[in-house]
Amino acid sequence: MLEQPQLIKQVHRDYFDAGAEIAITSSYQATPQGFARRGIAEAEALELVALSVRLADEARSEHLTENPDAAPLLIAGSVGPYGAYLADGSEYRGDYVLTQREFKEFHRPRMGALVEARVDLLACETLPSFAEAEALLALVPDDAGGYRCCGDLDEALAHRSTQNAGPPVSPSGYSRWSWATLGSSSSAP
Image (cartoon, rainbow, N blue to C red):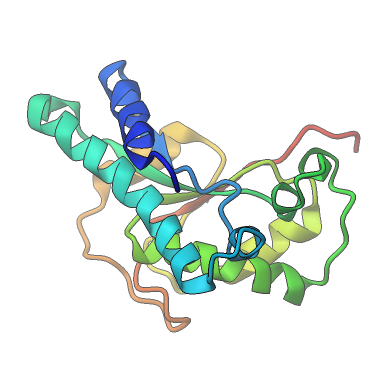
């Protein structure tokens, strides 16, 4: 995103051209804390997260201009686990321990930036920590009108195609939620 954002947009476009119905933003590991390690301030980091949405949306718009019958095409805002920020493999093991408050403080800015940039859904990916998954769900307000938590893409697409209401407004300050998906890593019970 920092050096060649147009390449990311082209990848999204290539996937749409190949028949993909969902573009996943390049924000899996993009966090204010991670960008801070590179000397990037939080405001600029969150703008880069928003850029990941704009690039996918531009690719979608271009594809739909040439292929108007391809709709609906969705943009999923990728939310990787805390372990992805650590970049030590713990995103697969889940061997990091934070409090609910710490997980929320870590994820809230990126999730907010993705929602404000108007993703269609949040893809909370590679979650080996149940406590982290609970914290992510807690960030979504109970009364977010369009919010859905599902693990089934067909259900998500069916919900998207039947939505007629405008964007919901939540009391927590997020202006729009369509739904979130939570994914977990395979691990022993």
